Image (tube, rainbow, N blue to C red; front, side, top):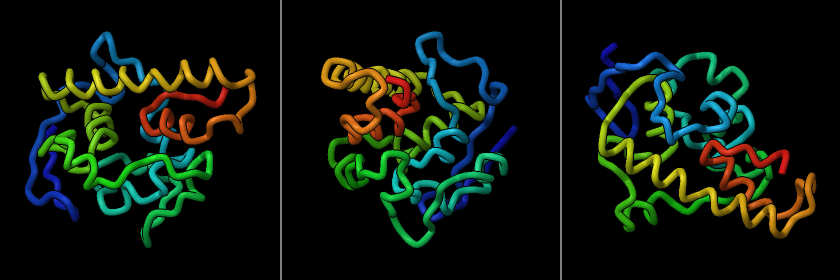
Length: 166
């Protein structure tokens, strides 16, 4: 299926979905949460996906915690800010031109079936690197203490890891 994107950050961007949604993932990439689950739990202060809903399945947004007016960290699952501004990611060179919103946009597109070869491997490597926060939570928090290290937990959530039961 061919997709044409026209939103605030991309105009006329085209890609093809070549894999079934939620299937045929790289063997080293096993996210614990789907994009719909992440949006309903609360990520990125509710601002991330407010102008690009047409690109993704409607049901992703049925329970999404969104804030079209601007970032609202109270919408985050852990109620804390845990992300740097997009400009920081751009300055570091971590933003790929095809995904100007960053990793989560890449994940949403990957989840719905887009594949980009080298870029997929780069993003999967970044996803794997975030696992270090799991170790910090396990080392420093009592099991089940959901209030311990909320920024690290929110960060993990942004990257499709589920820290709620640690």
